[in-house]
Length: 141
Image 1 (cartoon, rainbow, N blue to C red):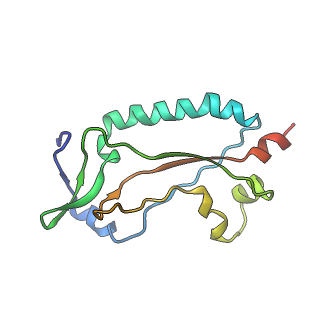
Image 2: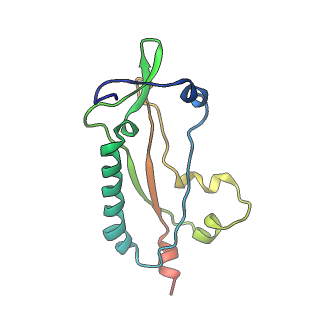
């Protein structure tokens, strides 16, 4: 097992997907309460859960980079996963975004974290974004 600082080589199955765009997952949940309740109660629990998960699965906080001629996952003590908290104010909001119907993909763009390469060409493995729809919370009974 690779330890902190030891590069973790990618296997042939990893390399098949390296040229593909990152996998993006979108989950939507109704939270018909004030935004302050979400930020004060749910967000700290999400961050704590992410931290506990990364304690056991620390390579997810690492980056893909080259070590010689090979692509590896490199994790160094102190690496982290970006956690973004955003608000989405589009009046068409939650029902349109989470509904089971066709819509243009540009509507989703503000809802996703972006995995960008840094100045050395290293790429993060994971980024998390939580988006609150304040109009959804205030319009609910």
